[in-house]
Length: 135
Image 1: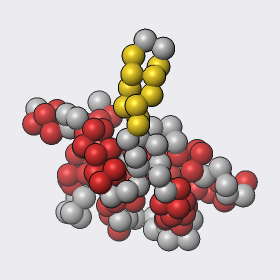
Image 2: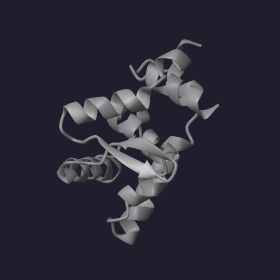
Image 3: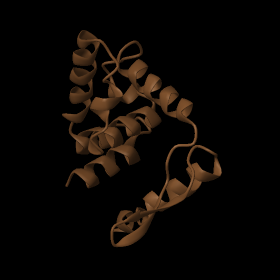
Image 4: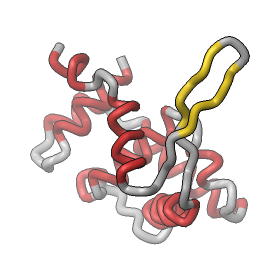
């Protein structure tokens, strides 16, 4: 129940923090009937570094043990998948690397979040949020 209240306005808070760090800017765009605030990237090198980190984590730094995964990268993989941008992040890979990366990501996605949250790894909150979002 508390998770619902804590996740309120997450998108706006994230956008505000990214603007403060200089990664994004704030613009008003007109969408036919209404104006909407958008946050385009101001520095595309940050995006490229993030994509390289994602690719590196599932290819050269891959561990078969999800408990040994960096929490930030693990969360980023799940967020990218749920936002349908993971395929485009891996688009620059060769065909073989793309298949390996997607296979490994699907291994993570197929894990049972309830079971993973019960393990004593320090990732229990992350897995609990993933379980709550999957329901």
